[in-house]
Image 1 (cartoon, helix red, strand yellow):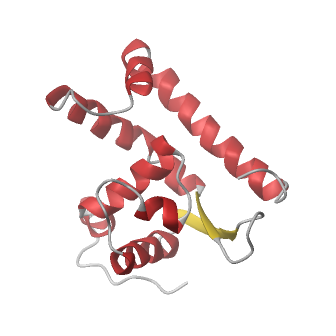
Image 2 (cartoon, rainbow, N blue to C red):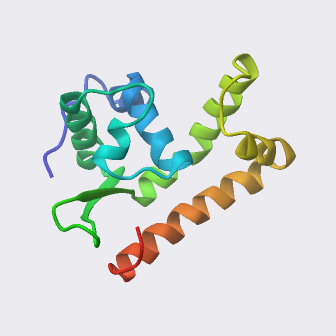
Length: 147
């Protein structure tokens, strides 16, 4: 895989170069919290990302090893985007953003997940990560499984 030229070796710079715009975080939200994994599902999100921008952002996530791209078992011409372990490790960060955002914008957010986070944040994060790993493992081990 081609390496990306970075402006500096700073870890915050590395993160900003990957996640420094709204679309990356919204794609991660869709995968982690909403269970979306196909191009058309991402396009259907309320924020209305364009096809060109979506393609660019998915390619960046692929190049960075945050998602992998697999063929759908239901439709060979459709691809699914699954979080890699590197992507699953972002769950705690996304939960923090979700928690912070819901504190100042209480009208949105997945209420059941927010309730779980309020009760036991660590357990909620671990549960979400386990679910994502299980779904990924299930799909990769048995491509005929429902996805």
